[in-house]
Length: 302
Ligand SMILES: Cc1cc2nc3c(=O)[nH]c(=O)nc-3n(C[C@H](O)[C@H](O)[C@H](O)COP(=O)(O)OP(=O)(O)OC[C@H]3O[C@@H](n4cnc5c(N)ncnc54)[C@H](O)[C@@H]3O)c2cc1C
Image (cartoon, rainbow, N blue to C red; front, side, top):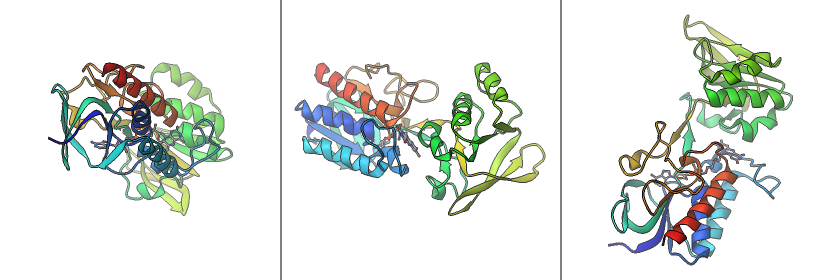
């Protein structure tokens, strides 16, 4: 059997490394299991301006610094993917591509990736005109025109937010009406700088180093039109990274771990921190806050 840790943290984003920092400073033995690189989704953004006390920092650097601080106090990182867990076992078992690990407590901090449109050029343009977070990046488009893709509650809320910070918003939705709750409809229809492209999908994002426009395809007729814009905000939902947790811990219909502000799940000794849990605002600062709470709860549990 590999070494048994007081706490195994699954995921090395801001929630995971804050949990690791707090747990390690509390003198718990801590293992962080991360499948890619420290920082999680933050590594996709070149500029974070809303982390308290820091004027501006790129996400990759902030992620490295979070990891460094946690490891300074004794946390250990293993780069591997978690494929399955047995959370009812004692100690709890975590299966990875590098073998089994055991934790007296487990903090799940695997995040929730924004859904992509799936266009070939999309990944290359992330941070250069393609964005998944209106609250994070909207203000970079102050006097500019942006497309907002989506029609659910998050998309409607993002469109409203953008309408206050950019010159013009073009909302692109594949149906002829929003799926969002009625509360969003009126303010959106009344906003003078929001234009609607119904029954439309983005067929291609156009760029010349940064985004210059998009080709929209009518979902009814197939007709294509080109629109000029400076940025494309994609708000078509998120995919929580919880596939390996099926049957182990309570998930909601969308796949998020059901956990409140204490980060406690329905399984004793198992905590969920950051974007992966049910919550209203998914940001670096709220993920970090969850990490601190989860470590504290784990310590109390032990
Ligand atoms: C493009 C972009 C820009 C953003 N800009 C900002 C911003 O300016 N300000 C702001 O506050 N927020 C911003 N956000 C949101 C912010 O990055 C997230 O809210 C935050 O990173 C969530 O942290 P987390 O630790 O909960 O999850 P994540 O950051 O998603 O980290 C989860 C980690 O878990 C790992 N993982 C997942 N599954 C497994 C597995 N099975 N085994 C091992 N490891 C696993 C992943 O590789 C990842 O590293 C942005 C997000 C994006 C996508």
